[in-house]
Image (cartoon, rainbow, N blue to C red; front, side, top):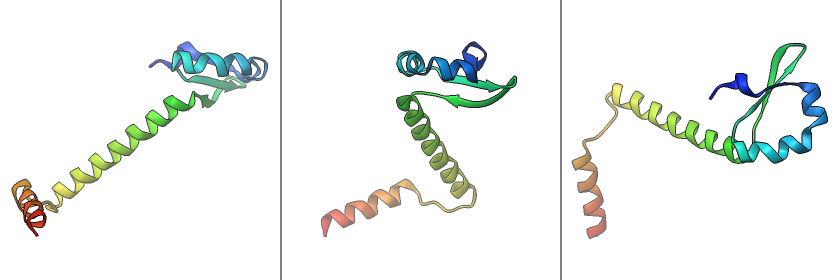
Length: 90
């Protein structure tokens, strides 16, 4: 995703808010808003934002899992399944 194709000044956001609200969900691309020539904020539709948050949450879980593996804090999968099987039998 290239932000350079969706860069607009803050005055554009102010004068085209309704159009932006309509088109962002259709394109799924965020809009980079500048003020005095500097990037200040990103506007995106809710679905895209939620998808990004879910992706970040999964990446955090994977990173935590990798840290636990590196620290030796894990059990062989066979042991886990054996424990689950023994719980079902009781």
